[in-house]
Length: 254
Image (cartoon, rainbow, N blue to C red; front, side):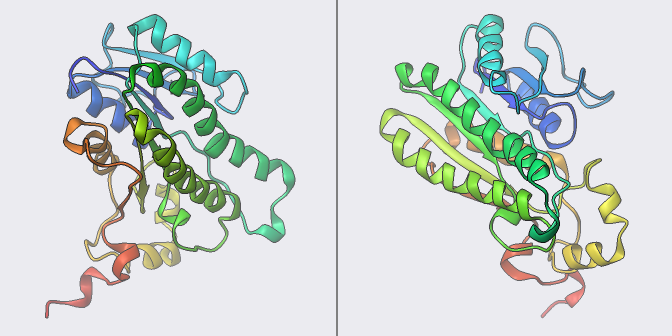
């Protein structure tokens, strides 16, 4: 990863911050993009100029993607990796979802990834080299109650991953996705306090714990590295075995 340039969105905290830290540690130069004015304290211990830069912008805005790509090229002179991690939650079931909240979730979770990918490709294709990684969700693969717009946006990212891999693999661009399960972040800690949710998720996770942002960062580093040079169109589930088994860690040994 040394000498490569990456854009990581949703990088102010949680999974995005962990990916940015890992990439920096592996020798990347990183443009961190988030709607927040600055990274949250303690999330970017490895944030140092000139290896890293931070851009505050709302990725739902139609011009934000071009702005982010321009900033990366101005700062670092090239672009090798795009990680579309930015996302918002707050989804509800279809019957109680209004148009505004549906549109906002799709604009951030899917629209921003589409626009950033399109803008990135204009610089990756002439070089016939580049990696795009979408951060989807296990809820884009399996159903879960009360997550209509979120699940739809994350499922669409998986479809986009497959389509882009077909279109751009012949031109040297790899496109993959990660589908995280329950990851312990500031956004999910309150849900983990709900005993019903905790039992539904952790009660069916054979590894018996929520994931940590660094678990996703490690998978992202692998998929964006040369170790994954023959992997494209893949959706890697990082969920402690939840979607494959629904088996509790307390089931005991056989």
